[in-house]
Length: 78
Image (cartoon, rainbow, N blue to C red):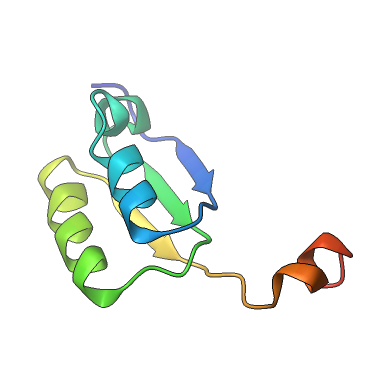
């Protein structure tokens, strides 16, 4: 496993976040001590599941959700 890097993601829903994080090679590519910055709103149930996976692989996450309505985001006014 390589030493830690960083990945920033912003996706639509919990299922998509889980699919990404649980995909083959994600934790290995992130590397030991790597940080995943989650900019999506994710449920506490999903975060608990993912936190266990991050810990198991020596990774960490930062929850940094973007709040705002889609039309505001499209207008680049978040």
